[in-house]
Length: 229
View (cartoon, rainbow, N blue to C red):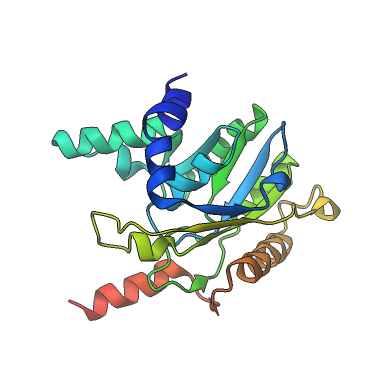
């Protein structure tokens, strides 16, 4: 109920009126049952606008740091992410990655919609980077549809490092569901996981028109941070 009120009465109408997002492909989102919306990731606001335009309730897996901040800012951030249906995950790897996978599978097992960013982090420069295979493992284990989504121009509204957004239109392109049933039962094969992930990223690139770079975005961020020291 709290999620519905925030989306439809309090926050949602204001944001939709200000930014006037254009959307195509909403008919590709299943009306019921578990499904994954796999999106490119250009800006912090991606996790805000995609749930606003999709009729069904969505849950996103968000880094746990958003839920552990101190003081007033931390409390407001925690409130916002909770209100928007996001779930905290530990991205440190190992057992934490397994726990994140199980969190996502639980959402899908309840017949809900899960939002995922295959790149694992926001693009540092507007390009599309190599996808991580966790999304492939999740879709094969859950046996649910996966729908590619392209966020358009969100990085121009709120680039990395900016605290306040610029008021301008954004776009959301929702592609047709991808069928990976041919790989059923093969979620333990790393070559299959890479193949599924690369096919998904190809579709995302086609929808978004972004330049593709076959390295992880997190690696690029680490290299840039090291050079700036």
